[in-house]
Length: 344
Image (cartoon, rainbow, N blue to C red; front, side):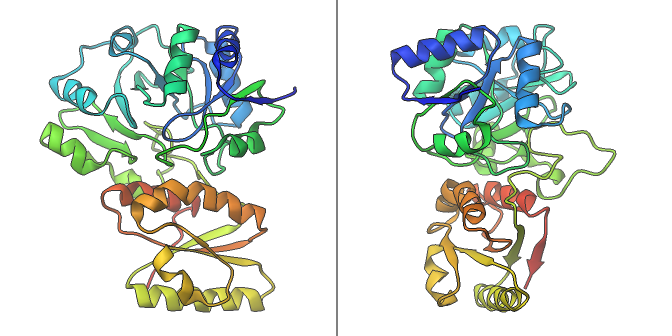
């Protein structure tokens, strides 16, 4: 299959919409990351998402809509006042809400769960494609399963060349990490995957919000993933990633020692560091993670892909505190590192 990358003019949008209606896959830009889109209500089309990504079948997908009115046919209950308040505050945007699903949504889309995850993206190209296709679009991140998520069309082409017919190139993604996923089936909103909308923002709207304990740990063998990004090692570069957390001076010292030992052992190490500490690593090979947690969210997946391009087999990363947008960053880095975190 020849995978084409097109600028999303009207002709390309109509072609992409036709492909979606035919049960085929399209690469879609969103404000979070690029998604691998298919008709969410077509089980065969959804199955081709799992095949293209190499994604385990029990890992649920997110259904994308263009209008709040499109939510009701997908869910089995009326949205709660808290859910309505969150939709009013953060839709369109990087927030996914989980509800009991209606019979219209195939179990293939929900990973076998009786709940469905839904969001309304803010990216104009994603919205236009949903409208043109005339159906909700299931769209997990457009990477091979386990790889860093794509935040540019070029990233997606790396993983999906020859697997899908078309990628719409909408430029670099604004947020850089996937949406916040919030379970709305209980009495209190529960974050299953942190993202661009923070716990603090959700609590401000709803009065309360809890973070699931699995956000910063792998699931146990007997636990079933209730959201994308929970169970499997995700976002991972080819090299072994280790995260260093603690007092900044100690972190820099520990990373330098580990880097130098890795070089002596014949490895090709790379340091991922915040802009303010890059110069502290001397002439060691390093890459910037931005100025702060928000900047880190924007560039972290690109940095992990760059590590592969540079042939790094040992990757040593600084951490940020797991609060605000930093929780999303540390969730992604933690899963990329299989939670190999060194406290110094």
